[in-house]
Image (cartoon, rainbow, N blue to C red):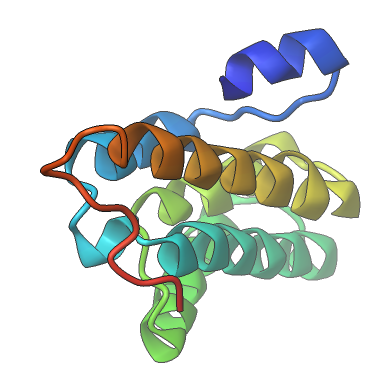
Length: 134
């Protein structure tokens, strides 16, 4: 759905880490790592941290590691751990986007994925998603 909307709206709503997010939200929707707070919060936090590091220090192997490590620490502190978000930090450091990346694809794409997961997972009686919102 996210890829379709990207094509129809001519807006970049998809990025590689969303593939791993999809494994979590559709494959193991009961996982704490797949809950909306983690998906949206973890992706936004990782993108924000990486963009800040990118604009302060540039992109190098050292700053890539710093961005991922700082994103992990921040997700642990805020209880928003979402493993694909580590890749979001790397995408930022490798592609060097502007601040708009926080909105598109990070926020908009994450919200669309969560909404798709809510609809899909609740079609089956034995599945309930999300387990919690916050």
